[in-house]
Length: 453
Image 1 (cartoon, rainbow, N blue to C red):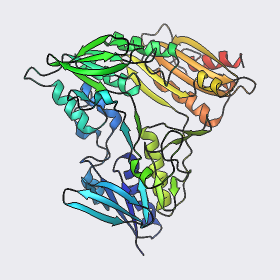
Image 2: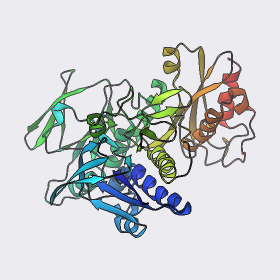
Image 3: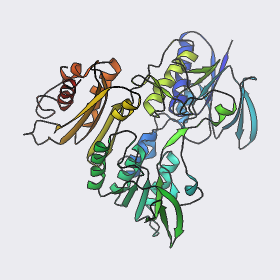
Image 4: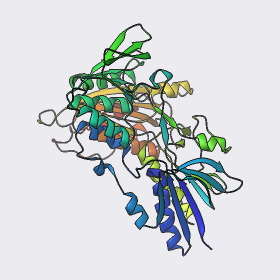
């Protein structure tokens, strides 16, 4: 008997689930029909790479595509582009799909929801032609065309609204294209939801060294088309002028279909699957439409990242195909770049821990990425937080030059394994003068932290 899997959304989570379900079912001798429904014309591409494509670091959009529609179809997936699901009927086990040809009902035995995230768009940004996001391939195409315009319409000044990961990456991409760039954020420093203020100040410095003007503590309240450009009014009464605006104030789970179908949502308005990625009988979900189990906070958290989408999609596909898999969660690890500054974080901030009543301490260490006498040596700042009494490591942040950022993986693995700060301080980390001082900055920070716990 052939079962039918319908997948809503043909990007990271959806297509990982679809492909894995087919592989597992085939190995088990089961027949599985897979229909994937995607509202756009694009599949399986790297959203994270779009700012670097806009900056010119990536030659073409094709380089961002992990697998084309034709490749998915050749692997046995009935992939239907331009197909928007407008309704989930869980009782009838069917979805309503709208295409250019009209609407139809498509039945399913199993349903995989991979609808992703949608950008947060405030009222003041709606309907303004020169306001664009930097989330989809179409967004990237629009920015590339605008920046390359030869008819005098290329922007001389771009305003980036939002100081999170996407805002920082967008500001870097525009500055690298030689465009005067202004980043405004209502927080005291960039990346305030991911870093402590002192570390955010280092991010700001990295952007400013690249030529980006950073204005903090400012919230945009309105936009007005004026003299061929845009005037952005701020709550403080100050106005900033620009030719185009990049909106990067965050995303939220795209769950309108799930909500209308009566599927339960979590504290952060995302779907909350169990560790098999099931949200209801025969209904599965993964990716940015979902909340993720945080192993440090021990609760579900909204952490939209392609790594989680791919892993959780594969878990869902394994279980749909008749196998057995569990998604182990996240420790909130992320990395980016702000000019020459590599920026990374994992776990919790001390402020988060104190809000939960945890007794914690935190330390910061300034060092170099290589032995100080080596030409490769760049500054690095490591900040770590741990729990008093148990000595358990709870989080870390790193900002520095070449070779700084990926050191976060040592701290991430320590959090994943429940290690103490002392464990990391004594760990056998690699040493050679071009790569590290004798005592790696991560080990130094953890040793200093362990002494306070």
